[in-house]
Amino acid sequence: MEPGLPEALAALSDRQRACLALVIIGEWTYDEVGELLGIKRSSVQSHVERALHKLRKGLGVDQHVDV
Image 1 (spheres, rainbow, N blue to C red):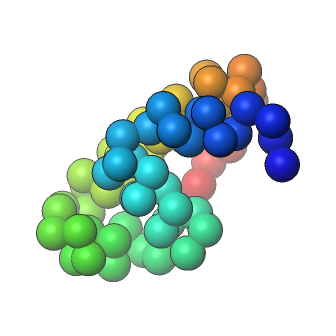
Image 2: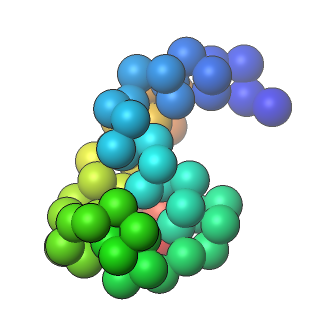
Image 3: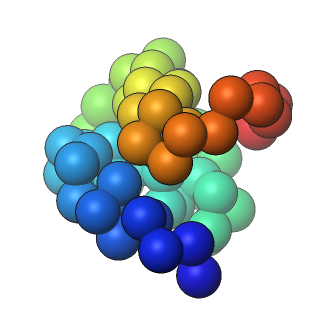
């Protein structure tokens, strides 16, 4: 595991962390996550994008990878 990952994940908001985990790890759709959390699909997408940006910045990763 990347040594800085736990700290970078801890820096995310609870909502960002939940959306990221469900979409990336759980392979849920944005619609499924939105329904579960009671938020719009576009909000889920924004949370995932912001979370990935924060993780990249926190880990010093400059390469952009689309999800």
